[in-house]
Structure formats: C-alpha cells, structure tokens
Length: 180
Image (cartoon, rainbow, N blue to C red):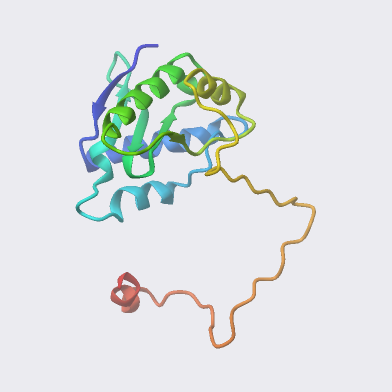
C-alpha cells in the first residue's frame, strides 16, 4: 500500500482525521487511548502562535482516500500516527513512523533535544511495538505512564472538596463564564 502525505487543509479535513481516529475502535483491542475530544482540544484550543495544524499531515492512498494522519509536536519532541486498521497492520505503518521521525528531526535540528517520543501506544499492540522498534524507539521512556485499575475492584466514591458543589452546566447562560 502506497500512501502519500499532504498538509492538513483545515476544517474540511477534520472529518477525515476524526473518522480515522474512530476506526481504531473497529479493531479488537483498540490501538489508541485517544478520545475524539482530544482531537478537538489539540486543534482548536491552542495559542495562535502555536498552530498544531502546521505540522499535521493527512495520508492518502492512490485513489485519494484518506487512510492515516501524522501529528508532529516539536514543542514536545513527539510524533503520533493514527491510521485505518488496514494501514495499522501493514508495512505502511513503519513508513509513516519513519517519515515522521525524519520530519521531526528536521524541526528539532536547532534544539537541545536528544530524544524523540511517540505517544498513544497500547502496550499490547505488538504490531505497533515492532514498528516502533524498527524505527529506533525503545520502551521504558520516562514520559510513558500506563496505569490500570482492575474492574473487579470497586472505584472509590468521588469526593468533592469542602465548600464546593458538583452540578451540570446551566447551558448558554454560563457559556461566557465557562470560556473565561
């Protein structure tokens, strides 16, 4: 499978990014921890001087079908790749990662960074782990934290600090205060 990157073109591409991200749920053992709300946060709740879409690329197959996207985050020395299940489980995944590594190295050439990071990895996704290893990534990075809570144990009751109450939003009447 040959995929070609192109820069993110704006809101008209957002639906493609979202659909690719959602497709991970169609694979047994979802390969990503990313929630659709994360994508919205990354792209629309940013500082104007740091637009994430400047380093966002959509990957298309020979028919122009969007199949994957990469996000390079030079301020975090990190990259991520999100793709359709058939790309995730193919040699194309390693090519996407390699491409991202090379572009991120170029972006970081003038920095003091000595390592690159790949986030949103499921520890039981052997295919991704092998592709990452082939690209020079190793487990045990100090930025990686995987936490688990056995579902057979009850979750503790949520405690609200003294003097606070928890309630639903009152809708439009609170929009300005919520935004502030």
